[in-house]
View (cartoon, rainbow, N blue to C red):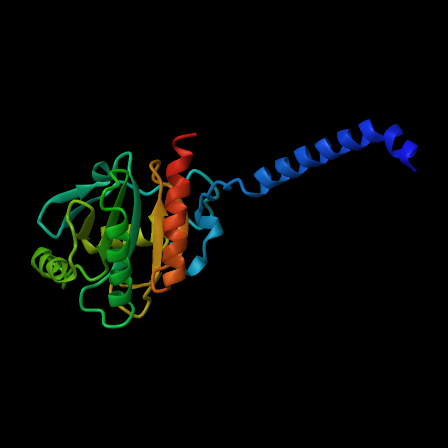
Length: 224
């Protein structure tokens, strides 16, 4: 028996080393953070996507825009150039999911306060009600920091088109007037190339944790 082990000692040591190397390689592969997906209109729930872009399967980006924030400043795509940002749609008089969503946006704001790469952007779906003065009052009540988070209003058609054709985040209200829409609980993660990298339930604390983790993954991808 002893002679057997002596004979195969080198083979056994070699096999052990190879096993350790293989296990380490598998561990690294399994624990490597996978890149976030890039969402295209064709891969999103049709209820949230305007019929004019439902066929698009690649190269989708957030369209250019020009809106007004809570301080009366013009906010455009250039305000978010080379930034990662979280976007959503809401209205200030909403008494259902909006307060929860806003509280979670405040949580995200507090987490990214010192992060120069990440911003927030909330669009009102009732611009006829949510003018600059109303957004300003709402921002003050909720503790919105204008250096990190813009609440924007503007022409209803532009907001509708952004919501349905760019962010793919609201439902069309066919029973209402022109460009009426029903916002959802969705938060969208947008990368520096203006691509959608994630959808999250803005009312679910676990989804907010997932969003914050995905922000880290997205940030890391720009360092690779």
